Length: 292
Image (cartoon, rainbow, N blue to C red; front, side, top):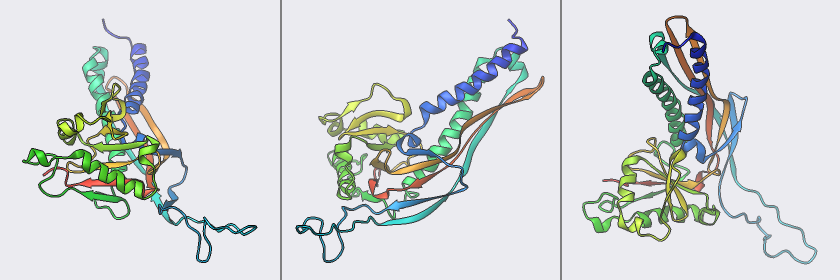
């Protein structure tokens, strides 16, 4: 049956709702950080230096005398600036497809537009968190050559040990990644294959498969959620503390417009504007040389 124009217009609202609904479930890196609204072009924030606070010279947190003054405590911070960027894409649904209820074209267009925005935002966040895979302020641990997760010598593969080294580095910087239960381990699909096929991992008492895979969560190990996303570099794994490591300053949430060119096409356009600020670099650790 041929659709009427009013039905096609109702479908326009469905497209808007579907893109926002799909995107909400597909974001991975964006769900691992804090989010706050911002109307500023340049966003200023303080990047923390993590350590347990101690008092200055001549005083101590643990030796306050009877009636004595409390020592002054102050965490080291560095003022940083981050400029917003727009992430967006668009797709076209032609008039003939609308009239003939070509649901495949509609679904593919919605998926393409959604993936364009989600991938761009998540990729930018990963780039900030990993410091473009060349760490200067975040922690980093390198796997020794010959001991990669896909090493030819199977006995040398030990993801549990490698991940524990990352957790150790973060914990040493006074971020309670183990006790908080908010730790995350992010990797791409190919790296996850080697993690999941390793007997030291699947037989570890803390390993679990997730029953809900939304937002990239596929399981957990060492009290940290395992997240799979294509934005993580092939031979890298990012370990960190969720909702602590960084903040997404959002100027415009995901916005969808359907532009009508009568009797010709509908253009579905979606975009998001914001910027990622790395506030707590030492709550992160980049594991490198994961694959040979």
